[in-house]
Length: 255
Image (cartoon, one colour):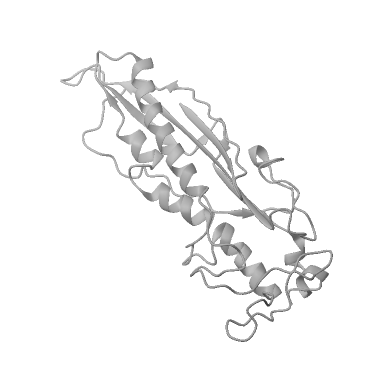
């Protein structure tokens, strides 16, 4: 069985497709009790150039972002493509003869692995760009409440919005939401696959259908979590306003 879900986020932009297929392994004796080492872990995020998503993240999921930003689109975007596959067979002999169970689980399908890619406008990677320098950092919660964020903070918080700030701080990010949802044992593809068992009266199709339904439900739960919008990039991870974005071409959005 394999399942693929394409998820791109930012202000409601989302594309999703699902596919399922099953494969069968040779019969072996079923193990007793839960087997360790089956849990899937979140894949690490990979930054790509503007509009340079690969595989299922190419095109609409990671489009070319308007540069310099003019307020009509996103300044960062993420794409998550989840893949999974498993092998199944039946017990041969003994008191559990004929029971269905799973023999393997993988976060890939047909050589294509789960991926997380993200992008941000190239202006935020260039401290000399006009857009970057026009983020003047004049905002002050007491003395200038309409002021601008500074370029460094906007670059940092755009990354935070997409993937988090560091390995120890993924809060208020799309990647963090994906990781948290996957780490929940109720949603973890590997744990769901490991627990898959069916009685001898089930056909292979029936066994796989029940397991595939559980995986599809987990996929949707993770996708929903991933698409929750973290705090905007002009706020920090604790919802503290850092200033307003000064947009091209007039650069008069803030003072």
